[in-house]
Length: 216
Image 1 (cartoon, rainbow, N blue to C red):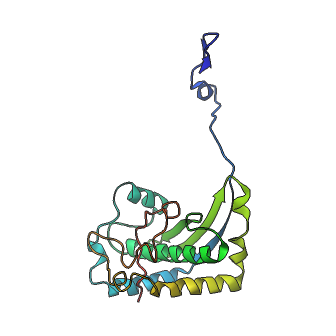
Image 2: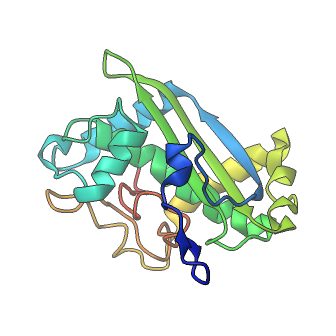
Image 3: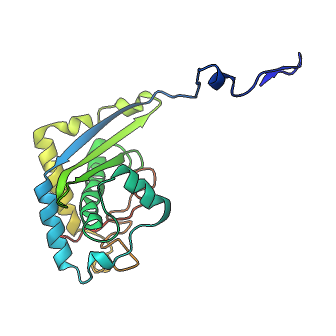
C-alpha cells in the first residue's frame, strides 16, 4: 500500500512487523435463549432410540469432510466414528430444530433469522456430562434486540414452548413417507424432511444432518 502519486510504498505487513495488528470488525446486536438439558434425559432417549433402530449405530457412516471436522472441533469429547456419539447428537440436534420452529411461530422471527449452537460434552465413562442448546439472533442493526426471544424466557412460556416442540415430532405433512424413513449405513438422518425438521442453511450449523424425530 502507498501513495501512487508520490511513488512511495509501505509493506502490507507493516502493522504486523511493528507489533500492531489491524482487522475489520462489526458490532452486532442480538438476543438469545439457552436451554440446559438434563444429561439423564438425553441418555434415556438415546438408549431407547438406539434399541428401536434396526441397524446398529456402529455400522453407520459418520458425516464426512469439513462438517465432521467442524463438529469434532466444537464437540471434542464426542465420538462420531460409530457408537453412541452420533445417536446422542441426533437427539439434541433434533430438539434444537423443533424449538427453533416453535419459537419462530410465536416470536415473529423467520426461520432463517434464528441460529443454533449445540453443546454436548461426554465424560470418561461414555455418559453425557453436559448438554445444552443456545438459540440466538444477531445483526448489525437494532432489529436483533426487538425482544421476541427474550419474552419467551419466562418459566410458563418456556414450559409451554418445550411441550409444543416435543408434540410437533408427531406431525409432518409428508407422513407416512417421512416417518417411515430410518437411518442407514449411508444416511445419518431418520425421519426428517423440509416439512418438519430441516432449516435454512443460515440457521443450522450441521448442514441439516443428525436429525430424526422418531423417538420411542
